[in-house]
Image 1 (cartoon, rainbow, N blue to C red):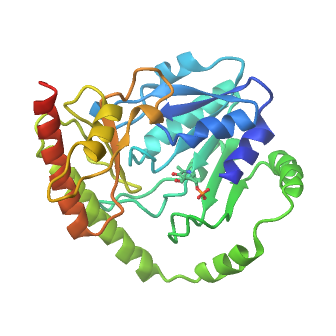
Image 2 (image 1 turned 45 degrees about the vertical axis):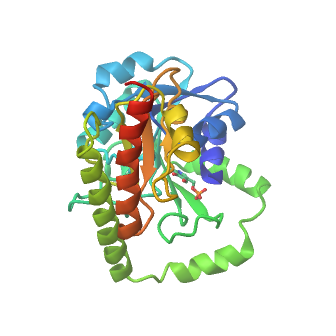
Image 3 (image 1 turned 180 degrees about the vertical axis):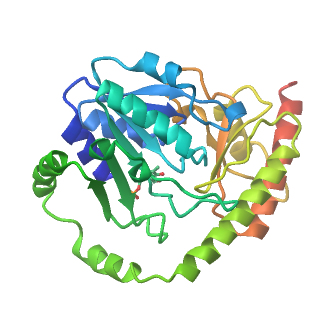
Length: 302
Ligand SMILES: Cc1ncc(COP(=O)(O)O)c(C=O)c1O
């Protein structure tokens, strides 16, 4: 989080813009605002697996105030992993319009179906425009630890960042010591974790596909699924699941989609599911969700 704020602070002036594919991690708004900038959304769609629109669509959004395009890859809340072609397309835009590309790659180990992960750092010819953000919080399930980093081959940018970092004084000492040990984690650990999350992804995706009227492409990364439901208002539905619905005193809590969009009105019938439960609890949660959708539609006459 702090790395993102520092990156925005180093590249932007007051009122500058950063283009971000929406739906996006909601804190991106706050991070940009803290640096005096604001997010301008590149709208992506559930029907297209939240992949990027055509280059011309993105280009239309670029103005003299645009400083950067920022992506979360793999994506929170979408679970989308961008292809090399998509990243190369962003690279072409960055070169043409003199932009930075910020890659929030905190989920880069969480990629499924044998996909080969491409980092923005792998794209040739844009080395001085790329800023990669990393963190220990997802990789080692250490979300409370405030340890992350900013990587860039742009020396001037790194000099500017150093000034901000010096004003930040220091990362927490105990967590830094802990993080040093975590760096020794074996490859087997990640293989096991990856297999486990892929199983969970399949449970959630298959359950969603079995619900009539749900729109959802299979996500290939991170631990999130974003789905369009056959309901009118996901805020209302999420609340109703907690206040009005229960089966054997159990229900499922979901994150309503609208909060992940900057464009008003979008995501109203979408939800995000984080598949961070064990297989048994997750299967039960998905059963409750399916039953909840059925009961909600009936109660609301949908
Ligand atoms: C895409 C993305 N970036 C950054 C963060 C924040 O990471 P950290 O805990 O390292 O501040 C999160 C946390 O959920 C995230 O989903």
